[in-house]
Length: 392
Figure 1 (cartoon, rainbow, N blue to C red):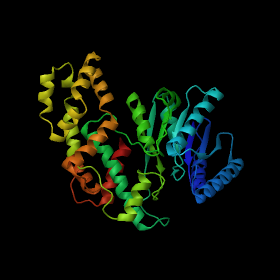
Figure 2: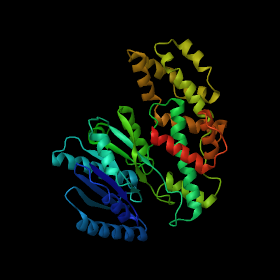
Figure 3: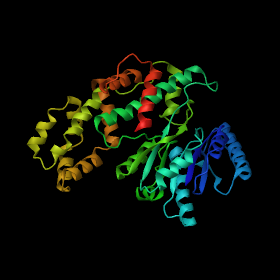
Figure 4: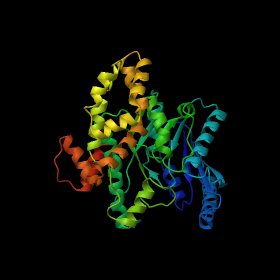
């Protein structure tokens, strides 16, 4: 197994090294590749921090590498503005992992995504190994994570913000499951793993400056045999960041700048729309356009508009023509109406009138659909969602 860590302006990199080093050793050999990188024309402060990280990481590795767990550092300074970003750094490390597997004669190793500001439980490596090598043939997996909700490292307002942001992420995942979306998994850069063969088959990591993890996993999850590893835990940092335009760090930065009204999520209504659509997908198989149109007119106005804008009749006809059964048709349908298209619908429908809500409001509404009572605090709601996902 090879763990890949992108690192740009990361003062706590060695904390992640120490956490991985404390893990109980799996039976397979494991390596860690950290890609210290910065763009051309990076601020002098960022360059100095990277040079410090490079020196410290190399020195730490020389003192701690052992037979079963080894740390390597790749230095990529002055990356062109066109390519520079977390996607490029992650791709550099993951491509190097594939090369190292091939060079070592490893037929199908596992590449693990981690972040330079994250730590993990001591059974982290063991549980990932078991998920991939214990007689199973999964292509990839999302690893369970929990942000810290209290402590002395950050101001109280940071912990308040990360609670709401994590609740948004967990609500989004569970609401997609409620809607019947078959590919509802977390896509967090610090918390995923993929088999090297699937990585190569799907064209590798992209070079996006943000959201690279989401877009990459939308190519891996539909392959099937995707899992959620909920028996261990990654603990990502709740800190704010100005390195990416969206995601955890950017959301916390906006929260700090504009608290308390900047962390919102999708209301339940668009998920009800998706649930209605996904429930009738098999009925589209080999149906004539008049029947399909009649089904469409039963949907909400935002959903009808979205289907028309995306030439749904053409895609449904194509899927039917290339499918021998409703099951095959359904798989093709979700190859078209995939994770990206689903998120675009959520955003479009909110702009058209649904608006957005505080995560605790939307999350409680979904819990009520599941039979829970109301009256929980935001922290209690988050704990319910965490427990729910631990059991799945």
